[in-house]
Length: 195
Image 1 (cartoon, rainbow, N blue to C red):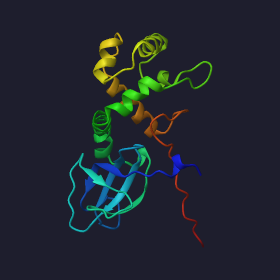
Image 2 (cartoon, one colour):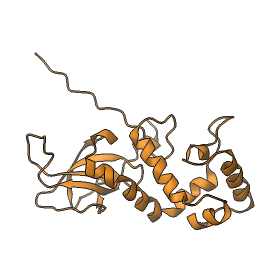
Image 3 (spheres, one colour):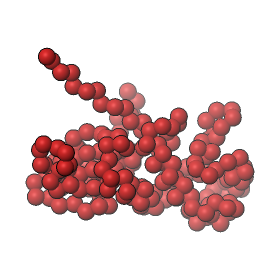
């Protein structure tokens, strides 16, 4: 296993907090659905006793002592998110992107071709051959410095942060061939039942 796959999320943002758990669950323990800051990993966690959380709140989930999270239960898929989590997802992803602009502006500056026919920038929603050529030309003249710089220098590219957020949501939904910003989700094996 390479170092890239060993890296874990250190911080996450709260998508939904269910103080009495899921309505269809037989156990009424509190549950938090989270999204990691680094890989946009969807997680379900058990908060520490008595802890309350708010949507969009940033919580530490690393290996050291955690203030609010007792246990990361498991990684979940997009379809396992509550309706509230799904509703909050794009806005919270956008907040993560805007809080780390250099990382995502760097994608516009440094991304390369996927193969001889397709460039990774073309995987972003709304970016076709014309936008691709304009971005490549502009970044060879001078690297982009901000999302505003991208918008100012590339005609008809209004919301680069929003385009990335839309791509992240598509990747989390799990039907993409290439993953630029997330790690693909693989379903947990069901426990084997003995009869």
